[in-house]
Structures are given as structure tokens and as C-alpha cells.
Length: 298
Image 1 (tube, helix red, strand yellow):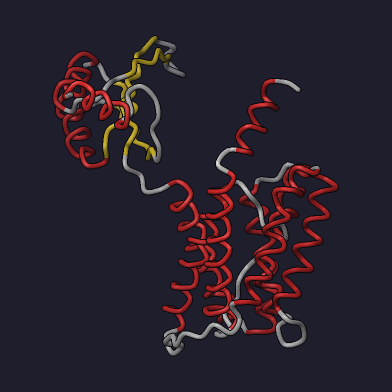
Image 2 (spheres, one colour):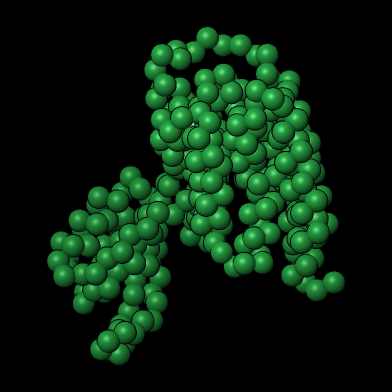
């Protein structure tokens, strides 16, 4: 077994109990939201849950979800290998079980405001989906089919997700009405946003990439007055081919204004690109710096 495979196996076994606990909580939240905000209100959803809503008058939704999950599990095992199947089997069985167990859970919600119901349902589904995705496990079903098509047809996950869920939602529109489709589009957007936020967290840092003719002044400003390190990257102009230093600095979001305005005050013509940084690790991260400060204070 090569080193990369060993590292992958080590990662997959890391914190198993904690990850399974979070995974189960995420599935419970999704099942609860599915029953409360979708099945009972007639709103449409993507994935296996959406297919179950289409056939809910003839087949128990939990049974439909279970069948789709098992089919996805088999397809995943055939095309993606036993490791994918092992990581998916718990979700493929637990999610439809939780849908069945939470079916009779009743909370009075204001069904007269459909948009409010749609938003609340989407937020809860997004939270549950983010928690499950964060653990590295899969619930099988439509996700497995998306993984297979991505591997075989080299189409991006985002395109496949939108395409398959779009087909499911439009199909539901023929039965439930196209007003439901409009709500479903809003819900899918909210679900994707919340999923990303739960997986990555709120951006607490910004990464600045700076090209300026006043490198030393900018470096001094960031290091001396913002107490942040600066990394110098050797760059080259794509058109001019001239050698140029690119400054990179990770700045806490609370100091974003000071950093941006300070750089532009030093060099109004500076080229600055600013990106969200959700997680920062390493020697100069906040955690490392705080630990060093604590040690020096002892």
C-alpha cells in the first residue's frame, strides 16, 4: 500500500465516533425538516425526498427513499468501489428510518405563509446536509448517482446536482403545480448556501493578494500596525513579462477595513484581490499565535 493510500485510510478512520454522532444528528435534522416543512405542506424538494413527495399518495415516502438509497448504494458499489459503499450504507439505511420515525412528530407551523415555511425548511435541510457532508459520509441515493456520473462523464458535481434535481423538481411541477417549482428553486439556493456555511464555517479571515509599487511600506503597515505576517510570492506579468512581487497576508475580518483602506492610502494604484478564508492553519495562524502568547505570559 502506497503512502497516499495509507494517509487516506488514516483520515477515514479519524474521530469515527464523533463523526458518526454528528452524521446521525444531521440525518435526524433532515428527516424532521422533511416531514414537517415539505411532506405536510406540499412543497417540493430535490433528491430522493422529492421523488418520494411525487409518489407520496401511493407509496410511503420512507419506502421510496429507502429503495432509491439501496439502488444508489448498489450503483456506487459497482462503479465507485466497496469503500464508497461502506461509507454510504449507514446513511442509506438510517435516513429513511428517521423519516419514518419522525413522520408523526407534530408542531403547529404557520402554513398560511408559504414562503416562511419554505425558507425555514430549506435552512434546516441545509444545516442537516452540512453536518452530514462535514463528516465525509454519504447517504447514498441520488448522491451516489451524481458521484458515478461525475467519475464516468467528467461533468462537474454542481452541474449534475442542478440537472438531476431540476428534472425531479420540474417533474413534481406537473403533479403539484408550478408555483411549487418556484419555491423549490429558492429552497435549493438556500440549502446550498447553508450547507457551505455549516461545512466551512463563517469566514473569520480575509486573504489579501497585493501587487504594489510600494512593497516595503505595505509590508511595514501590515506587520507593524495590524500585527500580521506577510508572505512574498515571486510573480511575473502575463503581458509585460516583468518580474513582480505579490504580497499575501491573512487578515482577520474585523480588521478588513483598516487593511484595505491602509493599502490603498499607501498606493491608490495597488492591485488588491481579497478572498474569504474560512480556516487558517500553520505557524502564523491565530491559534498558534495565541498559544505562543500564553507561553510567554507564564
